[in-house]
Image (tube, rainbow, N blue to C red):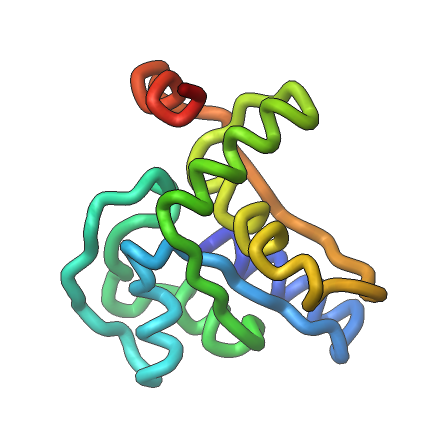
Length: 139
């Protein structure tokens, strides 16, 4: 939540009418569910390729408050969509990215119709992928 919370806060200050969409793995939607329920929730999660976004939120977290305030909408993507996005980045752009970086790409690719005619920016960060995980995705 720290990356999106900070970037969303800056963007909302610079352009208040901007629409911020947070993207998370369906297997670990803790931040989205916490924002939906209006408070930090503990919930069971499943393993995900997006280990950089997996897990819970600490009590009193400033990231939760920032996400609650600045993120307008959340999109959840499945594991196959994340894997497909990671493969797509390598095939189309020659980049090896980690699962967390694949999450917003997956959201974009799953709903290309939704973004037509709009200016869209993606924040993707990370190329730290375990070689065994990469091999499993790439095959």
